[in-house]
Length: 493
Image (tube, rainbow, N blue to C red; front, side, top):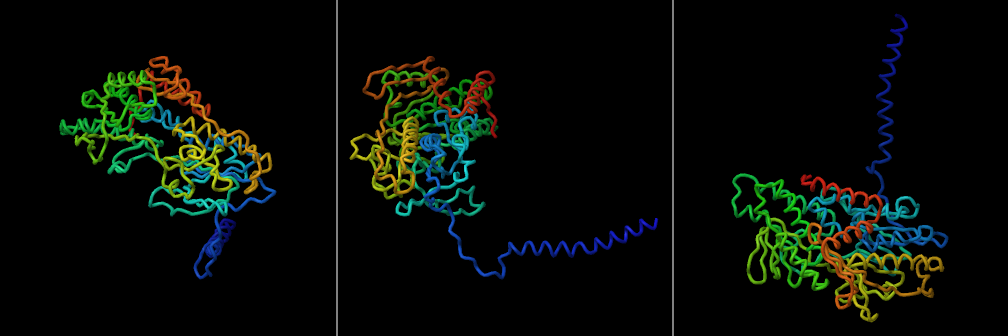
């Protein structure tokens, strides 16, 4: 056993030396990361600097909505480096967002990752996506000032940086209009983002379960299960229809103890679906009333934690309040010093340029034609934003091919035909197997208008084909099928 004792001696000697060597090595390595007893280092400029003449020009897109994503999809990555700055890394298919609130569709079915829309964002060396908000635009130096998005006060502090651009596209969208009514932002839920739909769904299911708890008074039970929707546009009507369908189909089967307490009220200051044909509007009113939706014409003056006050002084108690009264310019758009169109949007010319500065364009809900163009401000619709994004992508590709891709190099380039918008029609669902299809180009024009089951089939077929990717089309189709066969998912997750 002599060899064994020798081995133990060698091993013991090695272990006795190891901690000293390892400790010295660790301390030496950590010393490179320590800032103690070191001279302060000057702050380095952060961000993306200007492109060089021998490099691809850079297009910076602010926003990831319909307009911005359609633009990025159409841009040629061989001509441009594409940089997107947005507080969300996906596009929301808003026409189907109301269906996610009650479990008809799952949330991932209406969210399309930006990297799938424009793959070069995640693969090309000079193209990037930054999860950030735009805070300012320096048109003299061709720079955008940004600040990263953080997940609450307990996370990392926001990081500020700058991005130089050759072409800048403002597609930051709009925000929900509250008309300055007190309490709306604090107590109402908007329906514009996926997290809004998630909040509505959790709140609705929570109220359903709370109302079944012993000891809840009749009055409180009716308040908890009173769902109020403010705004009679397509979004408000579609959500009311989905909600009433959810109540009739799923709540009556799975929450039988409280099924007689849950109600939906739709409040509108004027006429619901005012842009639709009169015959279709009357059909929508009839169907909503038949499905149990109470229609109230009135103006909201104040919103309190458990009830809202109308202009006539009457109070409406609620357990869930959804606000869908249109959109207006965001604080970022208001902060920009560009000329504004009627309604406060960024003013643009016929080629979607901001005429007061070089190399800046604006599309989508944040933009509107200047009065000098003689064109009306287009409605804040997905089809308008999508059409503008497609047009501008083709225009920027043409500009680059003609040698005007870099900053201040497109002054003498012919931009070609200006942007022209042709309305394709409007659609809205009003409940189970019922929808409206209005194919007129304007309210005064003549054209095809349909209502009923055929319109519902057209509505679903049209939106299924408009979903951006085959992946999400598959998700939507499967969700519709499973909901039809098994009912909606009422899990509160």
